[in-house]
Image 1 (cartoon, helix red, strand yellow):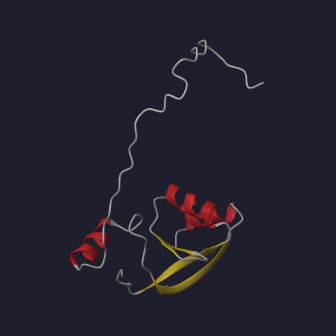
Image 2 (cartoon, helix red, strand yellow):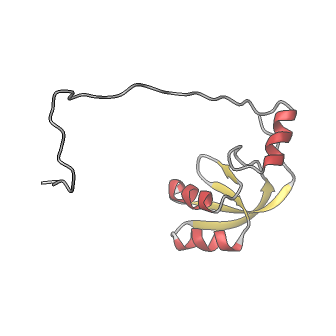
Image 3 (tube, one colour):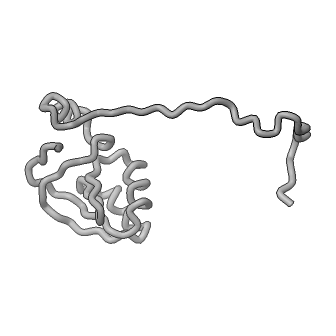
Length: 114
């Protein structure tokens, strides 16, 4: 389990969390992902963008444990060094999906959706 940090001033985000996460990702901001909210480091520009999307924002002061993909590199390295983060990778690869090998090719150019 990742270590929690000291108290920080954060912005709690509630509402459409997928939309919120996409916005936070565009800012490449560290983000803690909970089941009913996101916590991000207080940032005026990010806050304005989240507010413009109609999300509920509230300032809070609490420990901050950003998700590994959003955490600053130094935080991730510290967690790995202390054995608190398990890293896994999986790869899914499959061959060509040539379903209609005998079907004629479509002519080049714009096709019709009709």
